[in-house]
Amino acid sequence: MGLFGEQLQHHNLWHLHRRSVAGGVAVGLFAGLIPGSNPVQFFFAALFAIVFKVNLPVAVATTLYSNPFTIVPIYIVAYAIGEFVMGNGTGNMPQTELHLMDKNISEWIPALIDWVMSLGKPLLVGILLLALLLSVTGYFAVRGVWRFYTIYEWRKRAKRRSDV
Image (cartoon, rainbow, N blue to C red; front, side, top):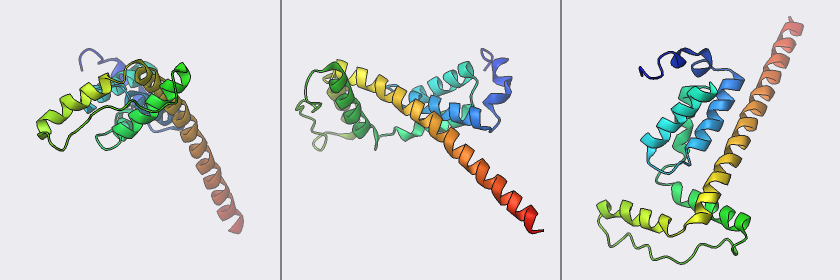
């Protein structure tokens, strides 16, 4: 905290307005695909939020979309994107033996890491491109939804005033 003491005082890090929230979602979507567990993703989301001066709690909370239940499908999509961009093949993942049922739960993490490492460069390229795509899409989606909601509320308020 002492390292970022002064930077943590910036108002965009804590206030909820359309730019800081949209930026926080974008940062969180990007950081959520950084390989590692949640503490690593939380750290990078907070770091990026401080650097880009976007909402820090939103950025950290948004990283939770990648979790043990969603990470395998996300990595499959990332691999397909990487294969497509690199032009290496059909986008199908190579057949890799991944038997988790006969292993102890403490052996799952090393087995998953070995499996991910066997996928190589297409996966890394795909993760980066997917992270960028999710960030840009999330940013503009939040901005658009926020704008539509604001217009809706303005019209509702105007109608209420005209009925009086």
